[in-house]
Image 1 (spheres, rainbow, N blue to C red):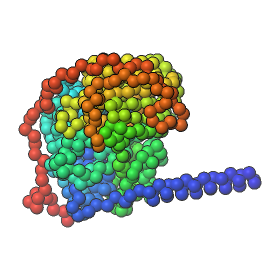
Image 2: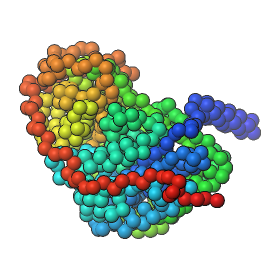
Image 3: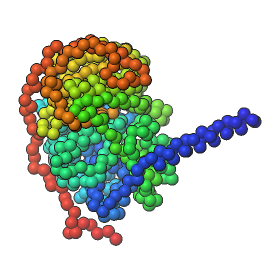
Image 4: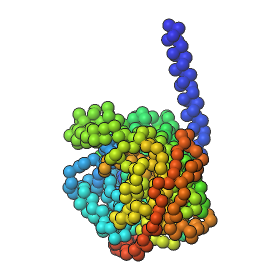
Length: 554
């Protein structure tokens, strides 16, 4: 009995400590308040992605008679919830799914009206569900537009989209987002969190950041609010808890700052009613959608990494151990309910078997800039063994060069060699970058800024891959090189002598380094980019509210 009482005391103490930690985390959040001149724009990757993170905030802005606009990146013609249960997007049979997209558009309009909006303030871009990150990675300049395996379209196929017929190409996506932002001129912008596990959420974040940079001289500089939505095992528990505040995923808790909006009771109940309007999604995963019904909504503003003049160092711990790891018990339960879920369970099992023991996880990424090049060093929990390799993407940005024309570099590397370097689909000499030697559980490369177009900013993402199957990945990050201009000496990578000390402060586990592949030949000059946006159709003007067309509500 004494032992039982001791365990009870320990449990009570643990509960008190957890409650105190939660209270402290909530106290550290900044209340999100709206003012008289504010304008709220919500960029949603799919229908329902507006209500899940911001249904209460939308209602609050409307109650204050502030302008609000919703913009949907895709029509949701695929199933983004199912995508959380597999490493690659569900292998669905090809076929025209435009009717599904139209259905989800109708649901989005119904949900918007439930929240108090007018249909005229809802914009649909209509880009391909599950294909927008592929567009971001590959489809710029002269590369053919992305063709969706689901709708079989390589351009926006919806007549009621903002620009029907726009190519599934990076320039056209960027043009649409710039038009929406410039037209509405928001003071507050809700967009996906860069760590979101869904590919379309990550792509929308990336395109939106570039669009905002392009509009900086036009005075469009909203406070951006990154909303967490789709994560494999979050939020927990999976049910409505309207008396409990929302909490970020544990691995993002310190990746703030975090803002918090407190909902009134009637806003909570109306948010649930709006979620039910997304009937196709609510029917598939009611517990997941209801888990977003809390008394607060949370938004982050993750800081960019500052590298003034291309110099500096930073270490980022990678603690998300949930990506690509489905809740297998829940998946098997769902497999008993419908053939589609059974197929997903089979795909998940096949992917897990193909990876076997190759489940290496990112532990830490170290970024070091010396004014001429960026060194990216990644450490993994386990040694990296063939055929696994690191896929590192580095996209440069300059305000005086169209983003589509800037280099978009992908580097494939192992601990022992640089396997390939590509700018979109153009091969670059492997001597263009240097491999920095380390242990079997780390990969480090030194990339000259010249190869990235001498950028002002760099968008960087990394994945550990086994052929085309992702083992693990990290969120895209922004490196801001604003400050002293980069030296002209960066025009070509220079051979470096062997080093005995790491160029940045030592991480918790020392990383021995020496240059094993010095650059010998500068990369050849890049061919002049050929294309601006592929499609230049008359753009449908966005409706403006006035007393003449504003609906009357009693």
